Image (cartoon, rainbow, N blue to C red; front, top):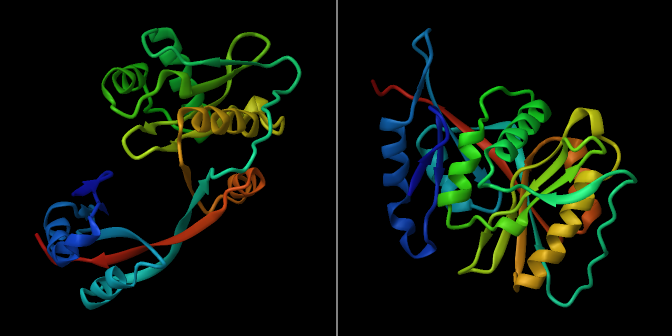
Length: 237
C-alpha cells in the first residue's frame, strides 16, 4: 500500500516478501501524490528509517536527497518487566473519552487543536473513528480531567488485537495544564492496560520535539529507530 498524508507525502507499507515491487510503488507515488506549489515547484517526501538500506538505495538512484528533518519511532517490549502505577497530579482524575457522546468528542477535538495549535480537528472525526476503526478500544482512550471537568490531557491508544501491539497516538496536554506529569501518568496507565490485554509491544512516534522525546525516554521505551525525510523535486505533470 502507498498512503498519502496530504499532497506531497507518501508512506509505503510493504511486506518484506514483496520488496521487488518497492520501486514501482515509489514511481506510482511520484505520478500521483506530488505537491504542486503556485510557483510550479513539484516535490515528494518519503520518510525512511535509517536501517532501511534497500529503500535508501532506491531513493538515491531516483534522485532523492536526505534532509535534516526527521523523527523517532520508539518500541517497548513488555516481556516480564514490571510497570509502575499511574498517579495523576492532585485535583485531576482519570476518565475515558466516550466516543458515542458527541460532547466528549468535541472536548477532545478542542484539546488537540489547542495543544498542537490547529483548527481542523472536529467532533465528527473522532466519533467516526470510534465507530468504525478496527483498532479502536474504548477503555484505551484515556483522558485526564481538570478540576473543572475540562480535558487537560489525552492519550489515545489504538490496539491491534491480531498482532498484540498498541500505539500511542496522539499524546497531548493542554497548554494550561502542562508540566504536571499528566501525559506521563496517562501513558503509564495505558501501558498497564495494554499489558492486561495481552499486548506484547507498544509503539510511539514523534518528530524532533525534545520535550516529547524526553518524556518517552523516561517511561522506559526499550528501542528507538531514527527516520529522515527524503525529498525529490519531480518533473511529472
